[in-house]
Length: 409
Image 1 (cartoon, rainbow, N blue to C red):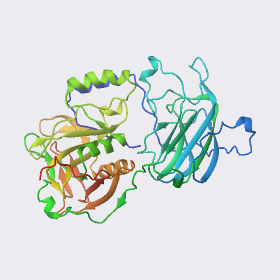
Image 2 (image 1 turned 90 degrees about the vertical axis):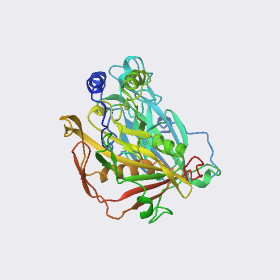
Image 3 (image 1 turned 45 degrees about the horizontal axis):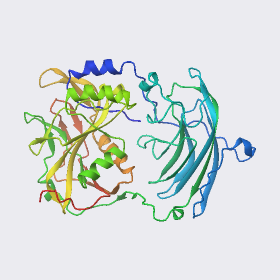
């Protein structure tokens, strides 16, 4: 999983470092455990209870797995399609050395001490059975527990996991049964759209890019990051696609950061909302800042981006203009000899990361890339860091295509 970062108000650095010093890093959602063990020939008493659900359509496949207590993620080998129904049932127990008792697939209750533990799915307790659909770098974990029936919103590989850190080990196993039913089994269910790659989109042309600056700037007008993506869709759709993909809206000031840091710890959420420095486009600060990050590493590294609502519409739809970079460490700020974040000079990687995370939600209907005239391929940020690009701008059209009447004509 990639880890990347935000520029932020430097006085918060020491406070943030202290706040997270005692918190463990999130388990990396990369790699799979050894091949799963099939239980087809095991005694019925050793297999998990079957769901009582009776979908109307045809069962496409049925598989059984054993998850060892010291494993994190298990690749089931099941590739799901949009609209397919998955029914999962599980039983068994695992036992952590520091726990007072065994726990089942629902996981342990989280006590006060355990609130600081960072887990792949922080809404559930340690040891809970969880799952994800799609790429390890971008998919969001969800709770299975003892049983779960859900609809796959996207094309993606189905993985099962135990909600624990990489350093956790437990004795015991879970036995898990998975049934997959054809999409036809769930008529009337709203299935999220599979993103379609298109060569062109109406209104996305060089005339549009005469109205969009190639770069954002700091408060003194020094040119900075490159505009490398556009989003077409309402404000509600824009917010939904980012939050569904696991991006977190960033706080605007240090005071709010400190308060939310305390509340975030108590609500079991990894704190990602360190403030993002204001940059400018269309003569104003960013309308939204979004971040993807890991606990602790948020100080040094996280994915981050800024978006502005354009003062004009494209075919009646709201246009959001964005700049995304991947901060990888620290360097000297050439404007004032201070300290600032260093970006990965290959900024196309972050543009591609935005595409990957947002399209994985099933809320993006069309994806395109546009190469403006005289494309920007090399430059320096406002702080003096260099970057390079192939010059292409990512275009994402969201599933909510209702014309936003608030768009400025």
